[in-house]
Image 1 (tube, chains in turn cyan, orange):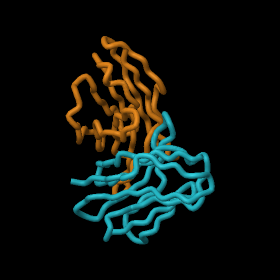
Image 2 (cartoon, rainbow over the protein chains, first blue to last red):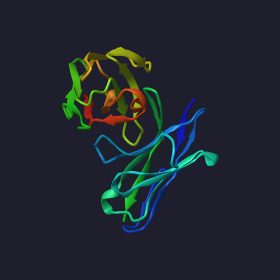
Image 3 (cartoon, rainbow over the protein chains, first blue to last red):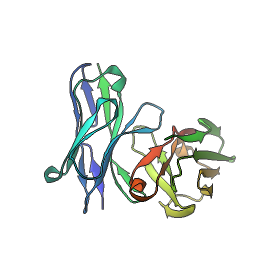
Image 4 (cartoon, chains in turn purple, green):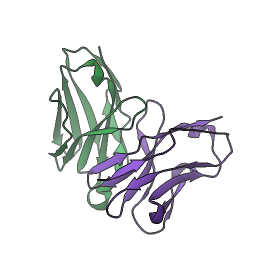
Length: 110
Length: 114
């Protein structure tokens, strides 16, 4: 069965600092991987996705993620965090008409 | 247009009420989803409609009744809910083919059961 683990429940970074949010997945075949962001009381917005090909994917709002098959990881990065990036971030693994989310990482920007 | 709309934004209902949540998309997507999200938790899948047919029901209590009148519209009918059903209800849709793996979410309906 597919599953996603986000090891960090809460991360605090200073504005302007770099950010890395961790995500590990478990899936038998080639995974389809996603990062979503959710502001309080809002829906989920897709930041980026990985289906195949280049393992470094670029997303919206200056985010990128790197797929590492050997480590079963799909970590999200941003070189310089803005206060508006404070939100909940969910990593997800998808298959046809099914998506499983990690527990989420709450980002606080100070 | 990558928008999924949901109405109402907020809903307060008593345990004996009947209400409905509505979700709409005009992206030509053929799969639509209902999720339930409790505070500080990830979304939990409730139902999946594929080509207007219910394809996944994640053992949701019968007091939640989904309906897909057409490919653009998804409803969730609520009846005799319990206070623990209070949550954010999210609708999502995904396109045909490879795009079926990529879900677009609406802003959600915040439901409070009193």
